[in-house]
Length: 497
Image 1 (spheres, rainbow, N blue to C red):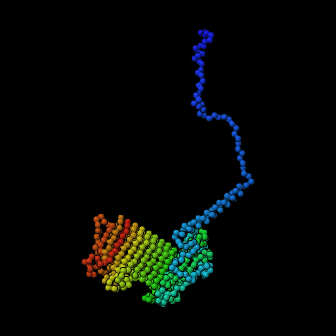
Image 2: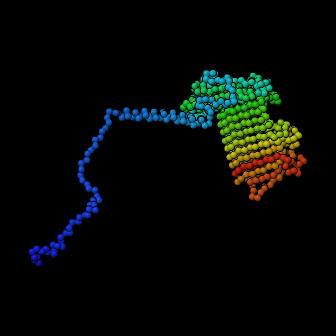
Image 3: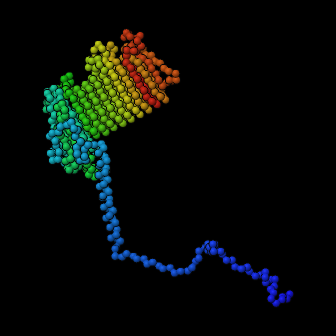
C-alpha cells in the first residue's frame, strides 16, 4: 500500500515508543539497591618488626615480674589469714603465749636455760613425710629437760597440784608415778621437751605457776601460731612426769593429796598403780585428742574428760565419778564405795561412736540406811555392756540402784547382781527385748514379774519388777527398790538377772 506524501503509516505509529518518563520534583530519583563495584587500588600497610631484644631477655623480664607478684601475694595472704584466724577468737597475737589471766608465773625456763641431754640419733625427720603430725617421741633426735618441785604442805601430803599447757606445740604425754625414793612431802615435776631444731625449742617455756588460793603447779607454754614453713622439724613433743612420794607401804594409810588437776590439751594421760599408796580428795584430768589410761586410782570424787581418745583403767570413788569422751571407747573397772553415808553416789559415763564396757562394783557399808547409787551410761552407734558383780554384803545391806543405760543402732546388755530389788524397763525399736533369769545366781529366792504394757508395744518393750522373797516387803511390788531403765534403737536389749 502506497502512502501519500506527508502521512505516516499505521505500523510506524504503533511501533513508536512512548515518551520518556520524567519524575516530578517531589519524587527522588530511585537509586539501585545493589552495591556498585568498581575496581580501586589497595595500599598495603607496612609491618614493623621490633628488633634488638632477644627472646631470652623478654622471658626473664616476664619471669621476674611473676615472681615478684607471687611473693607479694604470699605475704598478703599470710597476713590476712593471721588476722582472720586470730582476732575473732583469741586475745593473743601470733608469737605470744596464751597464759591465763589468773596465773602468776615464776622461775620460767626458756631458751638456753633448758638443760641439754645427750644426742640420740635413733631416728630422723626424713623417715616421716612433710606435714606429718603427732610424731612419736623416738622421732625427735634431741631433748632438753628441767625439774620443778612442788611442796605437799605437810607430811600427810594434804596439798594441791595442778598442771596446764597452752600453745599449738604443747602436745605430748603426762605420766604420774610413785617412787619410794622420792623426797617426802615433795612432788617432782620433770618436763622434757623433744625437738629437731634448737631455735624452735627456745620458743617453749615451762614455769612454776600459782593461782588464787595459793594453789601451785607447773605450766608449759609454746608460742601461739607462729608459722615458719612446712616440715616436721618445726614440731615439739612435751613429756611431763610427776613423781609422788610413798609415805607408807600400808594400803590403809595412803598418802593423801587434797586436790590434783590437769588441763592438758592434745596430751596422753597415763596414771600408774596409785590406788595402793595414794588417795586423792579430788582429781580432775582434762585433755583432748588423746586417751586417759589408768592402772588404778583411789579418790573421793573424780572427773576424767577427754575427746577423741579412749578411757580405760580401774577407778575407785566414794563420792562421785565422771568419765566422758567422744568418738572413742570406755573400758573400765569401777568400784563405788558408799563411805558409810546415806547420800547419793552419782556415776556418769558418756561417749559417742564408741562402745562402753564396764564392770561396776557396788561396795555398800554396814550403815542401817542403804546407800543410793545413781548411774548413767550413754553412748551411740556402739554396743553398751554393763556388769554388776555380786555384792560383798548380805541383802539387808543391799544398796538402792538407779540405772539409766542408753545407746542406738547397737545392742545394750545389762547384767545385775543377784540380790537386786526394784523395777526395770526395757525398750527398743525394730528389734526385741529379752530378760534372762539366772536361777543359780544367789541363795535368796526371787520373784520376777514382767509385763508388756500398751497395745501394739509388741516385743519392743517390757516392764516389771524383782523382789526377794522373805525380806518383808513383797506386798510393795518393788516400789521401795531400785530402778533400771535400758534403751536402744534398731538392736537387741538384754537384761540378765
